[in-house]
Length: 197
View 1 (cartoon, rainbow, N blue to C red):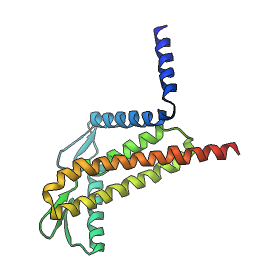
View 2: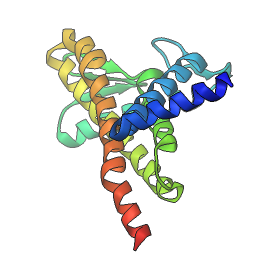
View 3: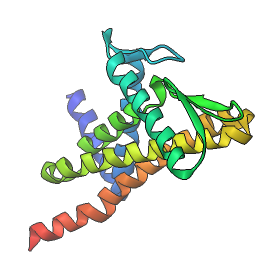
View 4: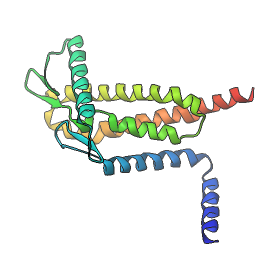
């Protein structure tokens, strides 16, 4: 009886949230995914080694770090900015640069975005194309973030921690939130209109 009453109260509270249900669901899934990640994924703090529940995933995480450092280096070449690349470290001519480690390769953000979309409202058939499109956006956001961080440390090396852990980290999650808003507030109503007609 008690379980039934608690379930009824939860449903009542859920209904009261009204238009905020989606935002609450977004936040719950985001924090739960982040918590799950922290419990199950571990790695070398400043390196490329990572594991999931003890299973070595260094090839995946390290491979992504090498790929991203190569992409950032090549983009700088195309822009005419001279940098050197050694493994996953990109340096400017003045010696300042960044090293891309397993925690900065965007895999965590890709996982969180995927979880958010899997739990979001809407038809799975549309999620099957929106999730890969969103993962491409997460990848491009991360490349842009790494380009910015590499550029900013050239002249302001002491500001790296502020931009890395403060601004760009939260901006990254803010952009993931905007992708969810686009799905929830723009695409989802259109799917419903098409279904009705």
